[in-house]
Length: 247
Image 1 (cartoon, rainbow, N blue to C red):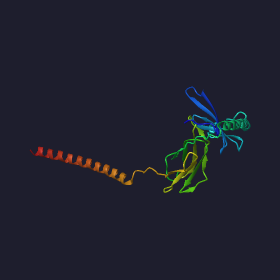
Image 2 (image 1 turned 90 degrees about the vertical axis):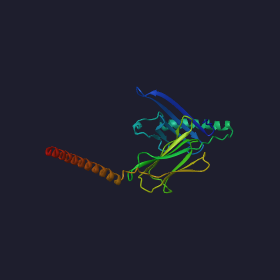
Image 3 (image 1 turned 135 degrees about the vertical axis):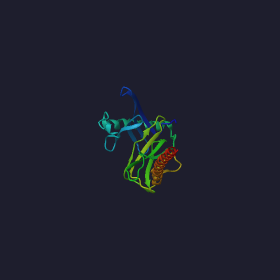
Image 4 (image 1 turned 30 degrees about the horizontal axis):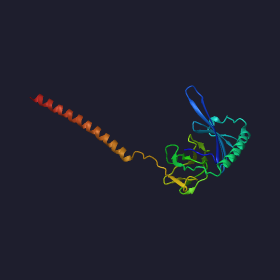
């Protein structure tokens, strides 16, 4: 997919480096400015996973992976904001040059799945993924039994892909119970109408008690048959010996 640069300017810095003797990682620094919400984003992604991002409200770096909490950005929030001011100027120049050309709109692919195997009454995380969309403006909401949820929800920044489309994850902390129905409601400019995907918790059936009883009964009958067979064999030998002694 080829993306124009009318409403959005992105700065990508690809760094290939050997962090260990046997491993090579790809680090991507992503800065996004655009018309719309969010109007700006800055984060660092390693091998497709977000390491940390700049929280412009808190004015500090926020690590998404705990092991990277010690990392800081050179220049801090002020430095990043100064760079973004330049990108906004470039964005306005691009808008004038493109003379109102509409940016492309690509609808997301949506998937919904649990983080780990579902067990009744055991805490879990439900994940809603919107993948391969453009531009990076999307609304994702969780619903339970058709009622919107607001607690226990965590949403990531926009992750950029190699084709310059985006993906975004939304996480819901929940405890599965029989009969509950969950859904992820997604709105995006590339969709003709809002899309909703559904997920109902299902727990793998345990081995039935009947099967266990039948198995135990079969084993018991097998043992009895073996014992009876030994007894009959002994009696047959005794009968043959008696016949021989009688002759």
